[in-house]
Length: 104
Image (cartoon, rainbow, N blue to C red; front, side, top):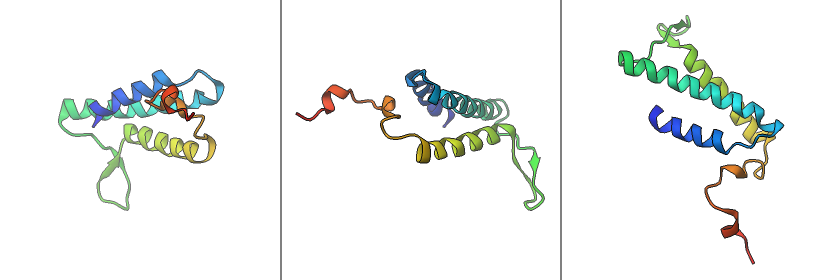
């Protein structure tokens, strides 16, 4: 999954406009990418992801720093997508060119 995810993240960062209202997206994409790479390194090196944060309600470690980066950035991205950014703000992620979508 990580090998598929990283090119998608790279595409999003390259297409991201350099405006002030999108600066938080650079940070969130960085956290997301860092978490994915951290889990991928563990999986390649050890064959599994090392989870070390223990929650007493569940009797085994369930979290690590990479997981926290992924979860926090996804939650904030969802909030931004649902409540802050409009469809026009995210039009830079379209694969289609605008000239083909115009209605005459």
